[in-house]
Image (cartoon, rainbow, N blue to C red; front, side):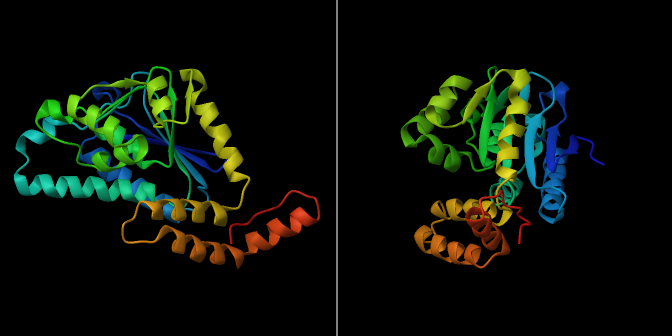
Length: 258
């Protein structure tokens, strides 16, 4: 179905693998278009309850954008390119189903931005993160200036973006950029373990947690007011009725996501 992505659905978890290992899985126009299509499909596919995004091979998650495509881009096209990338990554960030990045190597430039658009990140011990766009006379264009600052704070984000330096997995964890660091062979199993825990909870509640947390970063929304609104919506759901009944009856709930 895709020329640059591999997809695999197992136990309601869809794994999307960026598959350009000869190019260290760099993002080109085709990858972005296919990723856009795959994310749109996730919103609509009831068989998919959670998503893992990772890279092919053992060297790279996504080592950046495909710089060869930049040589013919005009000023106007650059703005369109940046906006398109941001729009795709917003779809990931706002997906009502959990989307987790399993970072299995270099996550640089657009690759770091892709990982940061996911709801959270696990890293292999070999992972490297960075926004080295200044080396090209550029800045991050797919949301990196905003998300890196949100995740690790202004000072460190500015340092990384102005120096172009990379950081390893353990430093990324200490900064809050990733939640776990795992040996590469345990990266996907650990990610699936966490997702299986999430999938045992109410899909309605999970989607509203994502929405409420994202509202914190939306300057057009009052996060506290949005929490009240989403709490009241969850309160009316069948999942809430099942969850509270199961608690009272001392049994495991059976959530149906409505």
